[in-house]
Length: 506
Image (cartoon, rainbow, N blue to C red):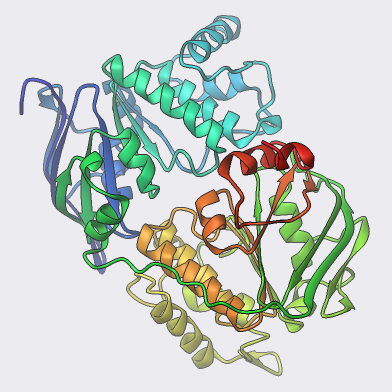
């Protein structure tokens, strides 16, 4: 261990039934270093950071922090040692204030008025201003992430672990976050940074440890590599780039007319006169900061909720009065953003999860009885066609890594040959190779004549696969614009509400 090494990981190994998550993993992080942890889905990143944060105990190997043995038995012990973590999925209570949420994450929180002052001071100091009195349910996704970060910073961490921190941020918010992380680094805080956005890694990180199938395969300076180099190091093979097959648009398949809907929950977003048309073979990309009506729009098209007014037409037939199963019969399929609990039942097997949306179009029932053999075959086809890393179809959905479950969910809908597919965040938390495969599958589906609505906060993704782009802001959808010639700055303005001439003349 060198003089300036803060954390040293030596030979960590962790195995679960049927899979070795980490095998003899060793690397080190220096004080003030921004260190990337890269790997495709299932490479072992999550298990590794859980061991560092005290959520999982290694089977073998050891760690040192500031030269002393480091063996956190639980996250509380990790935090006491100066290790903090901002998770990909926020752990906040919508009905509580910012200050109340932050207090819940502290071992010995000060009095509320003292804490509020500290929140204002620290958040202003690091360029992430927060009002401690605001209710969390009223905050944007970017502001919620600030709450998580400030909660960590109030505990003066030596190491800050960040898991996919920019997946819900606008380009402008990403710039602010990076300024904050660079300031922390300059003050001596080490940052362990997990992201599938390789351009961000190259811009921000000083070094990168690359995992493949649970093992360290390389440690490098990411600034000396291209994004493609890093992706190919992660997967161990040449990266496939999605290819668009030129084709003409045909008839309108799905049309939404003046759809309005009240917010389904106290912290949801009302839809306001949303209109759109998508032709056969067209991909309409919809961007927007999380919480601006994306979930509500998908639910209105899938039949999970009924609009207060307006119409949804598929191949000329009004469907707004139909439920989800009736719409599935008409080949309207959806893949929602929330993988566990919405797109998949966590404790059910992959066979059962394949059955839940595939029963109608795949003929997986007969006179009320489940055809388990057919359901198993369908699950196995999804696993094979979309390279889902799992011991088998009997595995529970919650046992899969986030990226592998995402591949299963999206693949399940694509293989049912929809006329209309609406997918929210199709590659969220998915590695570069798997993301390329999913995007290619979406392009291939469009080429067969399906109409696709792809909702995403990944602007590069929307620019790569979409024909036209619209933005959601506070439940309103902008008029579509051709993707060709559209700049990121224009998109950022559209996402912020500048839907009209302002966005067209940046």
